[in-house]
Length: 145
Image (cartoon, rainbow, N blue to C red):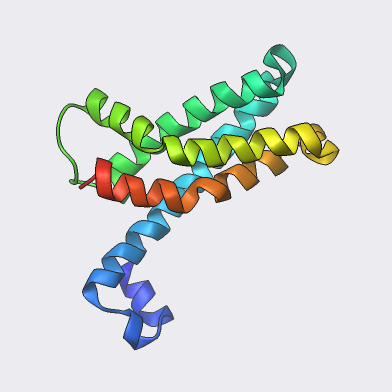
């Protein structure tokens, strides 16, 4: 990953510390896309049974848990310590600010934008982007350090 970034970025941005950070952010973003797919599929699968809000809550928990697994094994491999269940709990707590941004955006859109209520992928995508930077920063500094 870092070799690709060296070729793509200006030399001034390719210090070793910046490359590690950027590589982690790119991997975190890839994991986020996987989480978005899980999130959206879960909302679509459960929206008729649980409504958009209930489906959104279950979907967030499912996607965030999957994201923790992928971030633990790929993005931040070898970082962080302690039992897995404690790290998962720390991940979920640390990402509460991102959760508020993510699900707040989701709830606002499905409530006030008809297109988002009809096609929840709009709301799940906007929510994922809204929480991305906060979740990355908190994960890196508090969970996987």
